[in-house]
Length: 454
Ligand SMILES: Cc1cc2nc3c(=O)[nH]c(=O)nc-3n(C[C@H](O)[C@H](O)[C@H](O)COP(=O)(O)O)c2cc1C
Ligand SMILES: [Mn+2]
Image (cartoon, rainbow, N blue to C red):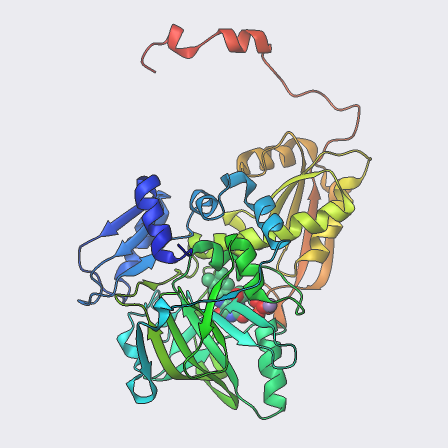
């Protein structure tokens, strides 16, 4: 069976039931799901969630499919601490898509005037949000000059039965494609794909050059070729096993107000005049599941972390071959902070690792390099290394006026910000040893023998 969202939910229910909860109580898309998620985020208890009765309707809403490294590990068939390595390995082995003989995605087809986006249970997360938004929306576009498919998550604001408004970060591939077609006065056909296997979701986020087909990258990430069929109203191939697809086009030369929208930083992006998408068809599976990714919460952050950690590992490895592990922690929105461990072999490799990291990812701001005895997934251990192995006059690098994220609330105009690297590795020799109780005694003395019941 092809990898899809329902199959992943079934796998959780069968083999990891503690990772999934079905909610039968009726709940509203407007703030109520967000309120429940806010409580769960505080408790740091984040199973995947299926809300069965939403706004009184029978379209289930699925959230938190990617909300922990455990869940993402199940998606990529690997251990949580090995996600970046596994992602990199699969990214390097793309599998071209295959034509599907039958297409669940076309079980229900609505064309033209039958299209009504307001019937889809879109969520409103925050009080500042201008309208309900699609957030788990993977936008597929075809470059007419290369014939290659591009995929990216793009938030889309509901603005009418057939209208969505779109935020595309400047310079990314989708922005570049829209820009190219606009110069030719042509619309850009798009398929908005919602409800997919988490390996598909992660693959769509891979950092790829424009000469690579992202359907093939997704196939590699799923470890099976993506099944595709012809869309109904646009010249695109679409995933046959998605839950819901909105077909349409991004119009040239038209801008309308989009935003504000609460983002991954925990702050809102202000409203502005942004491009407009017109829907030409909706197709979905019988009894489709609608997926949402809650902006600014753990799921949204972690989804950004894995592809970034993979490309960071690759970039640092070119300079410091003995890099061990990387973590982009939740505390840095999984984008602004990176902890990197290296097995240091020459005196100043920590600083080289910092430079490689800064150059590799525009969003990164603060980088901490530690020795291999420090677990990069243990934030307390990383900060302990900073406390004990780092001197700011000697081990600190600050790069002013670099390009950062336009979503960084403390950055200057157009996202210009500063980068900081902390080399918290110890010198190759002449540094004290970490305290240890003798190993033989540690193994022999067992808590339960001395304090039963603890
Ligand atoms: C949940 C989620 C939402 C995102 N929303 C947007 C968005 O609204 N606009 C945007 O430009 N990028 C957004 N991104 C980031 C892009 O999807 C990502 O940078 C992608 O790799 C860009 O691909 P491209 O350069 O091939 O277009 C989002 C990412 C995630 C995980
Ligand atoms: Mn791309």
